Length: 170
Image 1 (cartoon, one colour):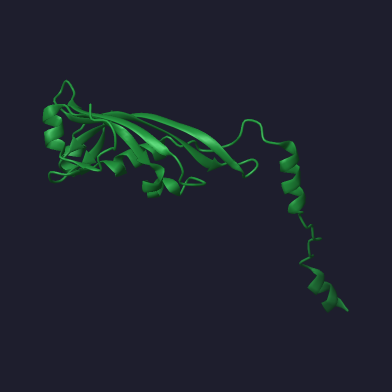
Image 2 (cartoon, rainbow, N blue to C red; image 1 turned 90 degrees about the vertical axis):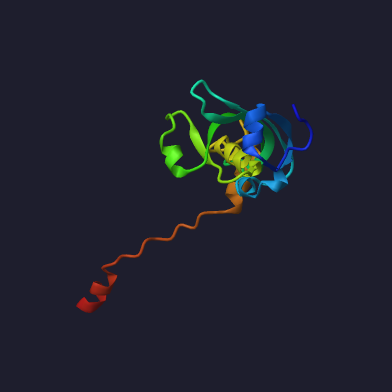
């Protein structure tokens, strides 16, 4: 298994022939689409992948990715550490037509040519593992009250839409 810095690009045909394994780390700062969901770009994702075939001879890329990232708590709006961990298995195909004939359990990755970009694949899997709502299990009540006090709700008496008619009567 190749360890260390994770490869950015590989030749999928060679990797499939060799049943190649790779493991390493990717800086979260290199995953731009993932950063849109995060409070900062600190941390690293640990990744392990394996190229191989299933019983039907379908080319597969399988693996696991995990990272600790900081998202915004939806209760108190402060940073909250979130542990991401995701196992994945995707099929490598050369065209949309081949992707249509895959068994339902496989998500396709279309690889045209002799180069496969791995960072977008890993980034997609990390995005899929994000929670819908990030929050502390116990937010500080004083902090929540302070935020409520900072933004008082101004209640204005609703205007009567018929007040104009009243003036016309006079």
